Image (tube, rainbow, N blue to C red; front, side, top):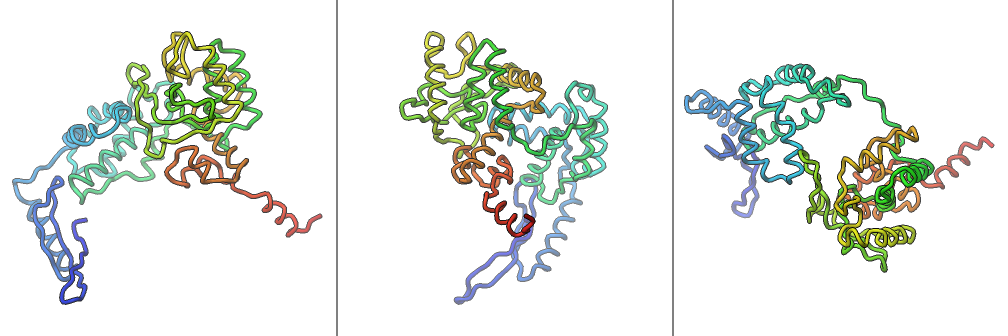
Length: 377
């Protein structure tokens, strides 16, 4: 904030005062203290107008802002996140936003950019229905500019822009965003019978019965699995390169709370024992491997899972549906939200409630007592 309310202790009494600061590119140029908020605001307004009218002030363009973001903020992110962002930067470097001044960047500028996106050659790609991810990337850059360069800058992205990013009809998801047990049973059976490599259906079973992310499951090493005690430690993950699609094992997890212990059921322990016996001559390091003994590629996992979904006429096209299904079924079975949260590695209960639909929180007594209250029978 340019004007901050602060407190000072004088003669045993706490008194309030207002501190006004003029910032430019994250650096405080001037700072004054005032007894009233109006006086602080008037000083700030006067100094800002004086600074804006000075010839020494820079007027950066969006392209220079993007360049500065790539130099200062981007290197601090994880490599997978950097690659995801860099994929969207081409829509900023050569589009109508590149030469526009940051002071002139407004809602109309974003609207013009979205119209340009819809005429971009990639808009005709099969499967692309929206440019919402590009808009999110733009929002990240503009918010960084506001937080670190010019705190008076207003991010001109509205709900209208988000709606305009969808230019093709997106089929609605099924309201109960989890796969039902009978659907999953048939799907696992299809993977088992129609794919030669047993690692795929066993990977699916592991993800479904533990709630592990696909990167966590594919990055599981035998040294992190204790079959005698029925425990698996999530301490690393696989990152797939956005350009080469090659898997890379990283000794980090998505978040700090993602480091956790997974308790394995007896059925899952038996399945892993069988898998370890089958692969003892191919790899003694990785749990789930391809025919060469290497880590599985995400494109292969996704294609295999989706083939089963299509064959059984199921609406899912994502490996993450298994995590949603685990969360919902675990909460229905146990009614223990903190335990489900811990098993998923979520830092907040709200995130777990998003995964496990709220219907799972209902108690059987609610239905019984409600029926008696109506007294219809």
